Structure formats: structure tokens, C-alpha cells
Amino acid sequence: SYINQWSDRFNNGAKGTGLTTPVAVSESRFLNDSDSPSNIRQKYGVRLEFKSTNTGSAYKSKSEENQLERQKSEGAPPPSSSSSPAFSRMQKKEGGIEIICEEIVSKEGKVELRIRARRCNMDDASVVKEMSEQTILKRLEEAVEVWKM
Image 1 (tube, helix red, strand yellow):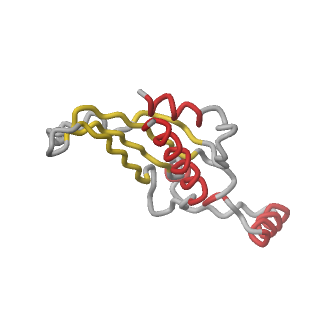
Image 2 (cartoon, one colour):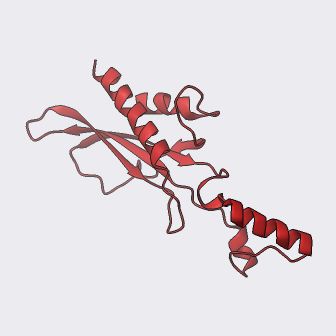
């Protein structure tokens, strides 16, 4: 599908897309939704999940870095976010954008395209990456304009 071809541009570092946060591209989890309304003829979708970087929740201010350095030089163990070892092994949810394209039949019987984008791969600790989200949505908007022609 066109949306799958379009999303391939974000693989392998997304060079030339303007995206500053690397993403992992995967198929949408909502494609096999058995509760879909009967007016939906076909569904296509992708998830662009942000990969972990030294930004967002991993970012440390200069004073936090200095404090960690002092603790290391004094031989103190670094502070942990949780005493549970299982918690530290869990992958953090870095956020992302899920794009669903649907061919729908309108009330008039005309086949139309509906495109929805929503945030995905988030929890309470996720940092919203507004600039990267805006870049993805801008590239999507440009692609839809080409698609309409």
C-alpha cells in the first residue's frame, strides 16, 4: 500500500525527512480490528515508534550530571528510579505516531479516503516529542497531497 511505501522513508535514520528522533516502523495494531464499521472497505496502517535517545526522559541537566559524577568519584552507587530490578529492564515507552488509512463508503455511496493519526507507545512517563510529531504529520500531509493528484 501507499502508506507502507511512504513509511519506508523513515527507516534507517530517516535521512532527508527532517526527523530528529529515529523511529522504528511497524504495522498498525488496529488493522485486524473485527469491530470495524461496515462502511470501511479496506484499512492500512503503520506505527512510527520513537527509538530511545539521550533526550526526553533520559536527558540529564548539567547539575544532575555533576551530581552523578560526584557520586561516582565518592564510590556511591548511582540513584535508581526503582528498587525493583525488573523495572529497570523494562523498555521505556518513547512515544510515536500511528497512522490509519481507511477506504470508506460514504452515505452517498462514494468511496472516500479517511486518514487518522494518533499518538501511540506512550505511558505516564513518556515525554511528548512535539517537533518530531509535527515533522511526521507534515510529511504525511505532503504525501496525501501527492496521493490526491
